[in-house]
Image (cartoon, rainbow, N blue to C red):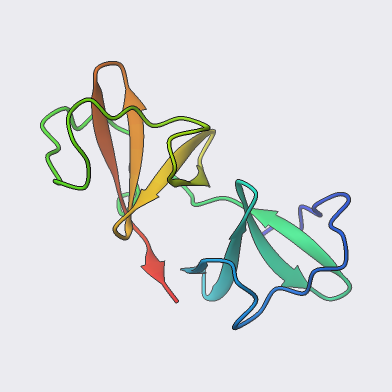
Amino acid sequence: MDCAQHQNHEGHQHGPGCGHTAIQHAGHTDYLHGGHLHHMHANHVDDHRVPVNSANPDSCSQAHQCGAHDGGHRHGPSCGHEPIPHGDHTDYLISGHLHHQHGDHCDNHGGVVLA
């Protein structure tokens, strides 16, 4: 994974018990923080993204019915769910999988492993 240093990360040390949701990702643990996936790397923090692949597609799944929220719920910056970077967009973490608002429905962009 390329080193994509997160700018202006103020002194917080991510790790077990830091208070942020931990995600197993690409053979290591990242931490959801402010809409970013942070990875501690030497003396700085890297920004990571969940890649688009067969486990985490970015395709439409219009028939997705997970029961995690009612049909009127719309995912976005103030929806109350944790944003998580996925490919070139933002998804929202719901019960261990990625939801993506797509018009009048919610797509399932696959699962993640919570640490």
